[in-house]
Figure 1 (cartoon, rainbow, N blue to C red):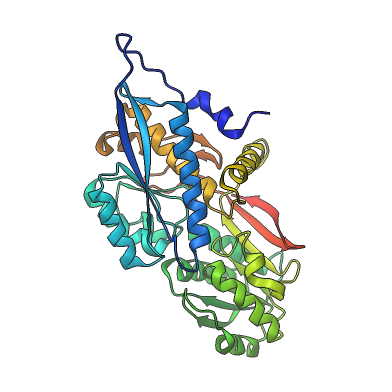
Figure 2: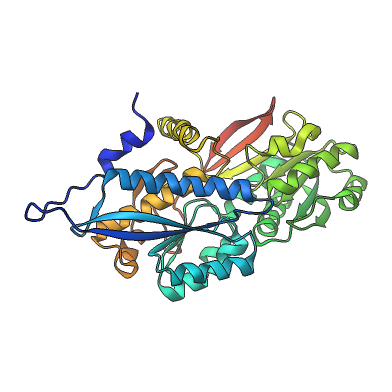
Length: 380
């Protein structure tokens, strides 16, 4: 059986023949940014591997753009999930003369960094930033390959009151652009569906102790708790909920919807207790492609996909595809082609609206049973 990458090669190969001579090789730098240190490092490394695999596959294919053979080089930076560090590495990538950036992972770093890339005219595709503000700034260089928090939070709010029959709902968020944004959208949709928000609490994206806010939550007797934040906090949050005897369902967005949540929660997570939504998802024949990617990723990276790696892979590929169509790696020349892309990737069909949001973005609902993440449904 052919590997995923091998099946991809015919679509990527472009042969250049110029008077019988080999085309001149040009090095093309693509930047990647994610938290490679701190509590979200496992997600950042997952993203980086997605980018590495795409770069390797492109170089293995021998891509030619504008009559010149191209060698792609990945320039990867660590933003530590910190906005100030994020802007610093964004400027560093501009100074490195990258022609495009895939990242950042977090909305809180993507949003301030996007102004730096826009001022430099460098296209940026985030594989995971879901805050609506990211694509609402009027920057023609800003794109994302996942649905935004308005869609994700709204769907979870409807699910909490509908299928889960939640009546009393507590909302906790980490005060980041992502966590607060998805929590606000969830609360809005839950209330519109007839649910009552009985408690609202805040924490940080560095916290590990939640006893004070959970004591207040317990007093409100919720049957559903929503957490807007990442898995590094959701894991200990679940353990402490169990210690305090809070048996409510825990809902969250793609930040908690990782394979790593099982280990982070330890024995604090009961089967079916957690419901989460990942921005993206495929059905039917496209599932075979995703399964092949996951198997190939594990073989080459030595680890399972956490969550965003397929979207990073597609973001690199769609950027390279726009360069091929433009016949140029110059940002100002391939940017118009990127805006008009219609690319069939691992994660499905990728094309962008006028703001840079993915068109017809899907969502996947998951739960956890027997220590494994289990898909509930893909919804659009």
